[in-house]
Amino acid sequence: MSEEPKKETAPADEDKKADKPDPVDDLKTTRHTLGDLAYTATTGRIVFHEEVTEDDKFNGRKPKAEVSITYYTLDDADVTERPVTFAFNGGPGSSSIWLHMGLLGPRRVDSGDAGNLTPPPYGLLDNEETLLRHTDLVFIDPISTGWSRAVEGGNPRDYHGFTKDIESVSEIIRLWTTRNNRWLSPKFLIGESYGGTRGAGIAEYLLTRFGLALNGVMFIAPAFNMETLFHTSRSDLPGPLFLPMYAATAHYHGLHPDRELDDLVAEARAYADEYRAVLAKGQNLDPDVRAAAVAKVASLTGVSEDYVDAANLRLEHTRFYAELLRHKRLVTGRLDTRFTGPADHYTYERMPYDPFLIGTDGPYTAALQHYVRTELEYENEHVYERLSRAVHPWSYKEFEGEAVDVIGKLGNAMRLNPNMKVHVAMGRYDGGVPVEAIEYTLDHLEIPLDARANVETKTYPAGHMMYVHEPSRLAQSADLADFVQRASARG
Image (cartoon, rainbow, N blue to C red; front, side, top):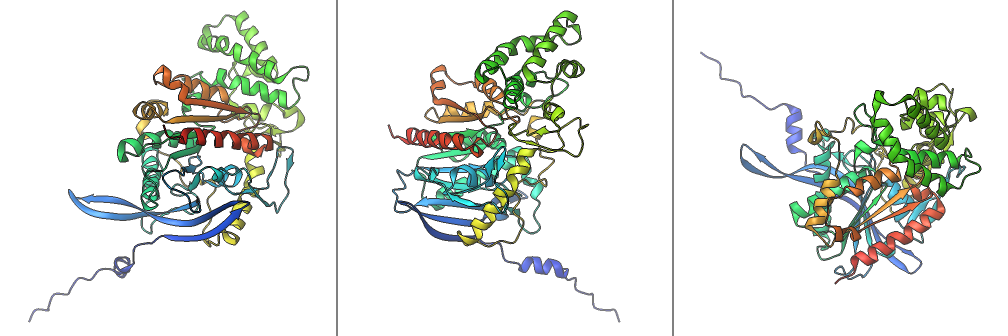
């Protein structure tokens, strides 16, 4: 007599997975006032879904990630008149903590500034200049930053790249706009650093994919064209574009005691074209011309002629920040070259760390953690990823064989939406995305000549996060408010 065949059963873990409910939004809402400003704050995580097609059959919208978000809305406002601004930082891998707690939100960190950092445990201040006075604010942490995570069993690496990052953040913007009935509100983006890369892509994608047209985009120290920012064996473009910033940094640290900053920067800018021509000659450069160029670059930047000569006239920036104050046993910051710090020794070829990042990370993190739990009443015990290394290597597969450059996407968004305005903020001491690198890229923005009036730039006497410098923060807050008001005007 044969045995009855055994029934196959699914593994226990698969049964549990099948029974596990889909994640749901995890949000906390509170009400606040700031002087005469009455507003509602909502923070937590919302579920990000994607439409899934399998074997040419639509399989519904599936949860893919839980995205951390904080948004502020003015109470009793007319949503057809009240603007809304979607904010994110860059990295890639950065959360929105910096724009949220440093510049835009109704509460801000007490961090201090270069040479006068606030000691632990830091503190929180009312932000009387908050942009919330002029626009609702939505802060978004891209997947794998902040408290944003892929769903259980999901692959976060699917979103660690140029296109999927743009698509996922854009979907969050579309979803928030729809849920909150804000399609007729004036709408803005504000992105910092790689947030400029992301922001240019999102401005185009929102319009072409969803028909969502923006009134304006605000860029803070935007990384539009990576070829202008990183030295490679095939490009001498960064050298002349970094030169004025090198000169300004040397001036800030007392290496040009008899010069006015503006005159020194103007001289460096004027020499940049000749410097570019010198570098273009490569090994065919005339020895006398080379010697003159070595002397000129050294005189502007504050490093020795021997160093410029040994560097073959090419001052790669992370090496420069290790070299400039080596004689003082200090390294400078990269993202803000006003900052300095000690090292364990001074034979490093490249800066061993960024004193700016170290100096600001603690204050911002403490402020956010305290603020979210005690004032916004949201609790989450996961690590809040301020600058996540988990997103690397970041995928730029769309740019294989060419430089990562999004100025074409910004240009397309402006051509398709001629009413969209652009505001660009730059820091004179930004050693990551210098003023001249941004200006060079904007000069290559392919839009009609009369549309150039839709682009405005502002330069502040600080670094990448220029708002850590109090006079710059006050000026920048006023400039952003003015931009939003002008770009929101109907007719």
